[in-house]
Length: 177
Image (tube, rainbow, N blue to C red; front, side):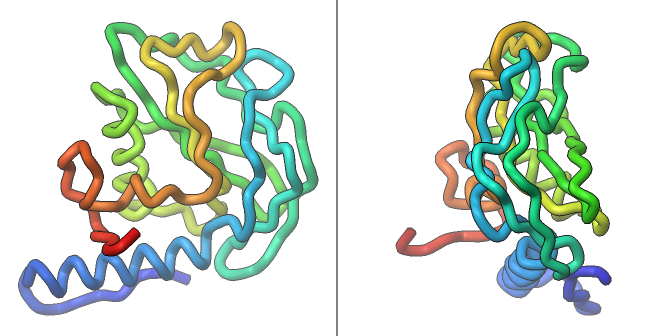
């Protein structure tokens, strides 16, 4: 079931932004987490765990995953160099199987997070739920030590907001937030 609203007119900026906002809201409801998994570095180097049970939706259907250590395994990724950042979109499917997608390399953590919006809304996966996002440190060594970057539970506003301080054009402008 696609979570999008189509339009058949030319690009009218405000209407186009409004439709992107509605599409984001529909998608985040149908394919997002319901609560917070309280993501953290796993016990094993390069892995991410949940500290709380998490309810999540896949296509609007509700599922639950118990607390799990070392759920996502990023230890096999290539070490980042030269001040490069990446974000990992952390998914669960209906059976509770964990997978992830890495964003392209970015010059800052904010830009790596913004790339999440392009990957999720531009080509969302209709068989998985986004549980959270991990944004790497600069020069992240994925397989050595704990993952000391930033953990976001659920779908963070900063991945889509056009009011972010990095000046990148996002889909949504949040007012009075």
